[in-house]
Length: 198
Image 1 (cartoon, rainbow, N blue to C red):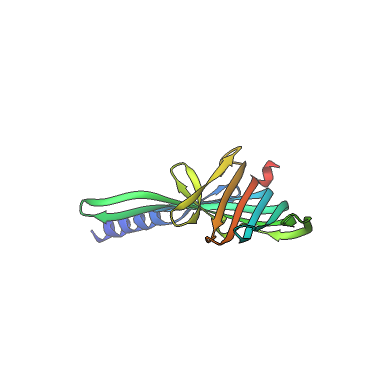
Image 2 (image 1 turned 30 degrees about the vertical axis):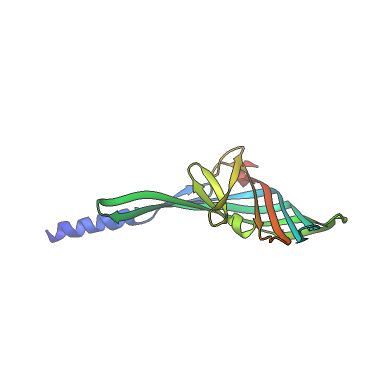
C-alpha cells in the first residue's frame, strides 16, 4: 500500500510540473492550473498623445506623435484556472489578461497649439502604462481607462499569436473640472510582425 501511495504522489507531481514546447520562437508553459503564452515581434507604426489643458473657454492642445523607425515588442498572457468553493461544490473558470510591451526608437513631432511642429529624431519610446495591460472580455480585448470604464482594442489583419497583425487603441483620460480642461487622448496603430515573416 505504501508503494502504491508513493507512485500516485509521484504521478501527481509530474502532472503539476511544467511542460515546455516552442511557439513563435518562445516557450509555452503548461501545468495543471495554467497555460502561458509569449510572442515576440518587430513593431512598426505610430503612437499619438494629445494633451489638452487650460481654461475651459480657451484650452491649449499639445500634440505629440511618434513614428517608429525600429521597434521590438511582444505580447504574453497566462490562462489561469480559477476555482472557488461554495455550498454546492466548486466553480471553475478561466482568467486571461494580456500584457504588451514595446521598446522602440522613433521620430518625434511635438506641436503646441497652432505653433510649428518641433521634430526630434531617434528618441526612445514605449507604451503608455494603461496600454500595457489588456483585459479580455468575451472575444474582445480592452484597455481599462478607469474603474468601470474600458476602451476596446481593435485587431486587424490577423490575430494575436499570428505571424503578423495590426493592433489599434484609442482612449482618453479626462481629469477636467467645471472651470479647467485637463485631458489626454492616447491612440496608436501598431503593426506586429515576427522577424521570420519579414
